[in-house]
Image 1: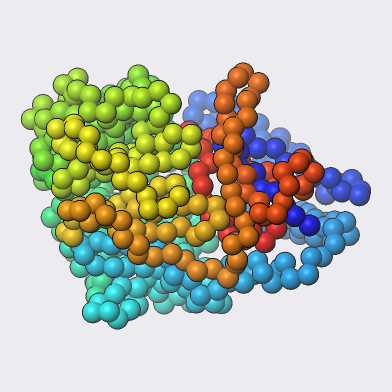
Image 2 (image 1 turned 135 degrees about the horizontal axis):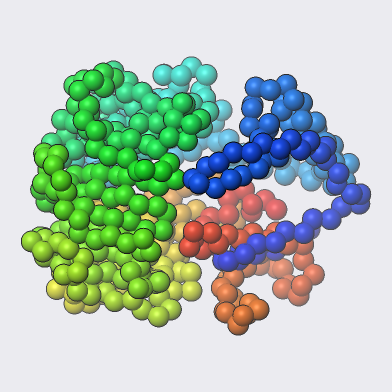
Amino acid sequence: MKILIISICLLAAINTSASQDFNPPKAKKVPFSYTMHNYNFTDFYQWLEDKTSPETFDWSKKSHNYTVNFINSNYPDIAGLKDEIRSYLDRDYRSSPIYKSGREFFWARKKGEQQSKLYTVLKGKEILIFDPVAFDKTGKSSPSGPVFTEDASRAAIGLQFQGNEIYTYRIIDTKTGKVLSEPIENLNGFSWTKDEKSAYISIRSKEMIEKQMPVETYLHKIADGNNRKNDVFMGSPKDAKDFFSIWDDRESDLTILSNGDFYSNTLRIRKQGTNGNAKEICSSDKYKYSIGIKHNKLFYYTNDDAPNFKLKVTDISTPEYQNAVDFYPEQQGIILKGFTLTEKYVLLELKKDVLTTLVAYDYNGKFVTELAPPEFGDIASVGYDKHTKSIFVSLATFTNPTKVFKIKEDNLKWEFLYQDNPPINTSDMESKMIFYTSKDGTKVPMFLVYRKDVKLDGSNPTLLYGYGGFNISMSPHFIGSTASF
């Protein structure tokens, strides 16, 4: 059987049919009324939130067994399919490299292991520096990404148990893996201050989650370990659905504070090492702003009267948004996906028809060049290591694992670095992008992924998938275990 895979950028619909009706066990309806964020709700299935309840366990077990029996009774087993998918999911795996201060780090997992471990490379030798199982023998605690100091000599890494989103952070020596401080518990986030003697820590406990309390952020001295008595309160949102964040800028002497909701925010700045009133530089209840600082220039990335986003710039001595002028104005049909500030260039990620390209400007706003990839693919991420003056770009396609390239800033040439090698052969597959017209006349891009010998005549079984929430569209990404179908 040949399968056609369609990835739609704005919507999804899946139609499943079988030889008999699908009638899984029904969950009882028990009204539960409550008020949250000034709204009144009635939830008929609140009782299922109690994972320890015998009723919840019984309903879950019956639903699982019914589904498995239904599939086994109505769909033939495909020889080798389970083994092929299992071989992709449970295998020796090495992540894309992480580069910081000229050093290489990566996550790796051996076949049969529950969690990935963090390694570094020193003098060509791979060294294990963080193993989650060393701190939780059950293997049920998963790690966060490492938060490095500027010279990458130390890293803070969090562990959360069974996805509870409550992290315990440990600070390690990145050459030996030695734990340098006692664990810091009940955290939601960790950010080094510029002097790296302290960190901004966001507090999140089981009680706070249950009571829907806003996350609070404090300035915490690293030497105090898990002792919080000397912590200094930095801020929190008024409502748990909103956010507050604070960080020290590495390119200036400014601390930046941001608070808002999903759609908009306010930005304030103050001199690092002070805790007084911060100066407001922009604020909106409709638009969002993020900033970057380099060479005494402050850049605003925003959708302020620009649905496709734009980049504005001002001198750091006059940081208010009202003083900023267009660096890259909004373009019709092109979305400014993001920007990266390197020593020489302002790199812009420009998305057109779902595919992203990378272009370079100088700091005077003059176009320099398009960094055309050496092969077809969507630019999925861009990073920069200022110590080696290297740009790192990941290139994604449907039919091949993501490739990582390095671009030296002095010559802007692409150099291949890494690609995963999963046990799935996709050489007989291809993909293409087409457009179809929605009911309101909008041209919607759609990707087709299929075996090269499939005739696109409308008669093929099709796996249809799409997503369109939060302004996130479907971009090319390796289809992985889906290729088995």
